[in-house]
Structures are given as structure tokens and as C-alpha cells.
Length: 631
Picture 1 (cartoon, one colour):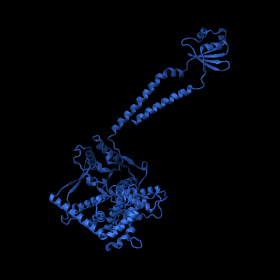
Picture 2 (cartoon, one colour):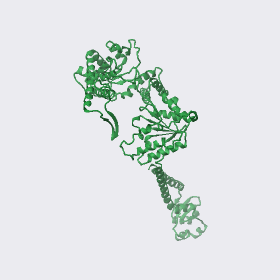
Picture 3 (cartoon, helix red, strand yellow):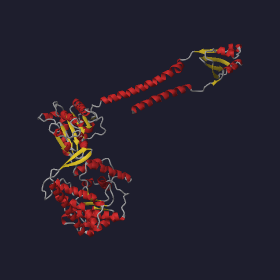
Picture 4 (spheres, one colour):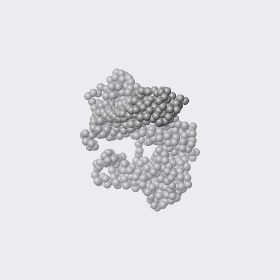
């Protein structure tokens, strides 16, 4: 429709241009137009030297060179008209009368153009209309063709190599072997090695799966076809399978080659799930992928790389050997990888000499590569907003909180009473965290609203953790209940500020009982089978594989854990009420307490087993900061 409108506009502009040219050519200093009787008078006066006759137009030239213009009667000779008006015959004989034939241009403009121009405009309109129709028909015939794009040095805006991908050493090694196999196949065939059919990249969102695929495209000297799983399926039946066939035909013609399918779970989900039946277009697309990867015709040099963050929903036939032979698990980066990623993303940004990226990496465990990129970008935005020339450590530290919790809500102003309640609530969290041996150190306490949080207490793990103990879970639940315990102790009242704390504590307690087997009464067993159902939205469905009697016991154990943790938190805030009030008053006064100041405030009451995690009196850190967890 846009093309048709544009073409009609072009035709209209051309018509205006032609009309303008014609008007310009006919424009100029027009001769004065007089009547025939006036011409006869001038003839009798002897003023006229020449009269040019062209059809009905008379061009009169006086003896002084002046030109006049007139028109005679149609179908009448000029001499006859002059005689009827009483011209002097003697003067008329002295007159030079010239008869001119009409020019071809004037004949064209006067006779042919008025009929030809509408025909030309109608023909141009029909031509452009037919072009639009034929274009639509050709696009309709292209539905079954693959939408994959071919990556190469000539059409890649920025080439990425393995050297530019920070961390992920094992993943890069797996993929570099695939690239090497395509480059030097004889090296592997000589020892009987078979080329892997497919490589599946698994990992949480933002960990670098697509970036690794881009690095493979940059390293490989073979054609690299890439597309998303959602690009296979259309509303028309059979289009997905047709596109799969066309994609593999193109890849086989260009073999050895690589195909990258991003978000393959869009077409690779379990078949027979009941969402569309056996004729489901998505299932037919998956069937064609399975056949192309390992069917009767399996002698190809095409490697398929796919990425997903939902390996649990993929069809088993897609994961068997012979299809996706290798599964590369990409985890969140550790502290060394985080520091390397921060260096990559800050390479083109002005960093102050005092910036310590190692410290920032220590404060961000659990951050993915995308989170770290966002962190550095937010710091650069803060610098630009503050009219600075370089990024300092303060901007990077502040960006950590912004990525975790959101921006500061300066317009969210507490009343004096609410500010005191929030200060005691956050002080309760921090005090309980400081006193429990298995709790992470407190990094920062604030009653400044960020995101949806009215206040927050950031806890900092001393090192990256992959395993969590029962004692750590119980400490986290007690810390969550610390805010509510402080409210009850000081104000003898409970507010809605603890709603999220209760939700987090209850979920963690239930997971301890049903998923981790950390209940002494029920023993080391798991209960319930949670499955994600996608129908009219996303829904987590739990299949009960236990009796109502066990369900009652689960509820009792969850209540027991929450109740005991609440008692622990209440006991701590009662025992150290003076410290609770001191921390809350400091928060009301300055709204934020950093780790160094908080450690000094509780240094005289902290348990002996936690003293090595606290900052020494000389302000040197025994254990560096790490990334925050919100309480």
C-alpha cells in the first residue's frame, strides 16, 4: 500500500512538472492584442509593415518593430475580413502578408495532447497497480522459503571473535573444536572422529549464548546461516516445514556450513502436549527439523547450533545423540570472568584512574554478562547526567543498586511516622543479619525508595556460592522476619511493609520442605511435581503426588520453620534493642548507612564467629565486598 501511494504521487508530480514546463515555454512578454478594426485603421494610416497569418492568429509587425496580436474570424480569409471593415486597397497592396503553416508542436499540443495525456496517466496508473499485484503474488509464493540470513565479513556490521568474548573458556573450547572441524576435517577423519551434528547452548538469559554464536560466525571461514525459532512458524499450514527444508537445502549447497537457530524452544517443545493436536504447525516444523538433522540423508557437512534457556521443555527426540550431540552449559560468570567482562564493556568509556573493577566484580555475584553491560551503561548515563568527564567508582556502585532495585523514587516522600517505621524495619533486618553466624554480611541499609521497595537492606555474600546449607536458609528466613519483629517491638503494631518479606520467607520455607528435603519430620523426600502450563497465559501447575495427610504435615513444617525463625528474630531485636534504636535513629538522620559505618556500630555485639567477616578498626576489609542480595 505504501508503494502504491508513492507511485501515484510520483505520477502526479511528473504531470505537474510537464504542465509547469509548458507554461514556462509559453510564458514571456506577450504582444498587445488588438481588434481587426484597429488593424484596419493602422493599415490605412500606413503604420503596419508585415502581417503573419498562422491559422486564425494574426501577428502584426509595425514599421517601428512593435508586435501586435489579433485573431481573425474562423473560415474567413484575412483580406476578406479587412475589406469588410473598409480597408484602403492601395495601402493594402503595400502591405507584406505572410501565410505560415501550423507547426508540428502546435498541432501536437492543440490536437493530440489533450487526448493522449489522459491515456498516458491511466496507463501509468494501471502499470504501477499491476506491479503491486505481481509483487504481492511473488511474496505469497515466497512464504515457504527460508528467512535465514547469511553472516559473512561483507554483511556483518561488527565482527566478533572468541578473543573478544570474556570468560566462558570451556564453552569457547567446545565451539572452537566445531569451527576447527569445519576448517580441517581431515585432521579428525584420520582418527575416525565423526563431525557433531548439533551443539545446544544452554544457560539463563543474558549469559552470552547469542554472543558466542556471533563469535562462531566471526571465527568460521564457512557460510553461517542464522535465524530465530519463531521465524519458522506462520499462520499458513506447512510453511514452517517448508522453510526448514529450504534452509537445509541452502546450507547443504554451501557445505561445509553452520546453521544457528536462536530460541529453539519456540518450535522444539514436547510434541503431543495437547496444544493444537497432531496437526499443530509447530509440531510439523519440529518433525521436519528432526528429519533434516538425522534422517535417511545424513551425509552432510552442516552443523546446527541452537540456543535456549528452557532445555526442560525441549522434545527428547531433539536431544538424543545424532542430533544435538553436544550440550554446552553456560553459567553465570565467576569473579574473574565478571572482571574481564567489565573490562570489555568499559573499554570504550572514560574510566577514572581510581576505578577498581575488581571490587565491582566482587560486589556482583550472580550478575550475567547482560547485567554487567547494563551496569556500565547506567554508570555512563549517571556521569553524563552529572556533567562529569569520567566514570568514577561512586557511579559504578550506585549503578549496582539501580540494576538490582531500580532508580531512586525521590518523589516518594515518607511522613515522619512512616519514616520512623521504615527505619526500624530496615534496622531489624540488618541487626538480625549481623547477629546470625550463617548470614551474609550487610553491605548497605537505606530508607530511600528504589523501584517498588520503600527501603532496603543489601546483604553481601563473602564469595560466590553454588551450594546453600539449611543453616543459611534458616538465617535468611529469620532476617526476612527481622523487620516485622522490630515493628512489633517498637510500635506494638504490624504494617504492610512486611508483606514481601513474608512472601519470600514462606516460599523459601516451603522449598526447604518440599524440594530440598530439609524437614526433620518428613525426611529427605521431595513432594509435588511442578510443571509449567502455557495455555491462556503462563501458569505453574503442581501435580500432587502425596496424600492429604502429607499435605497437612507439609503445612505444619512450613509453619514451624516460619514460627521458629520469627522467634529468633524477635529475640535478637529484644536483646539488642538499644542497637536497633541507634541504627534506626542514624537512618532517620542520614537515610543511608554504608557497610563500614554499620560494622563499627555493631562491632561490640557481633558474635565471635563473624568477626573475621567484619571490617577491622583500621578500616581495612578482611573479606572484600560482593554483590548484594535484598532483604
